[in-house]
Image (cartoon, rainbow, N blue to C red; front, top):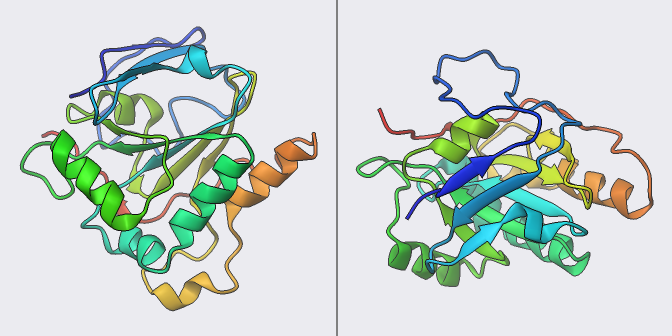
Length: 205
């Protein structure tokens, strides 16, 4: 399963090489007007259907030590649960290509979700890398938040400690939760762009 269609009102979709500059293709503050994706259950989701709700995108790869850091400590699951309690839709995205670390079939993705007790709305399977390259997702994890008006308001790291050591979770600033709190209070997101850290996304060669 993969992305069936990606359309954006302000930006045309084109392939983005891994050697692209660090700046994201979709700038924070851009309107993401329409995106249809297919999840691990074969269900299509259109971003326009989520208008009026916040959407969190999380790029993930089970084999990545940085992903393991956040899941083994339950930090990612707690972040997911808090975001969902605030009414957000949480989409985990797997852009690993077949044969690459982190690739999962639909059944494997669902089994992983169950094993991790992941609090996600759906797992998007992006084996061709179209969605990841459109968003310029570079690492696992790489986080994005889209607000109720379908504007990208945050992109970057999950927190401010770029280590794979689970012990560093304590005391780290969770950028995703901070951004969600800003939105809940009706304020602009104070920290809207941060450098992502983690393993490189295992795109199709």
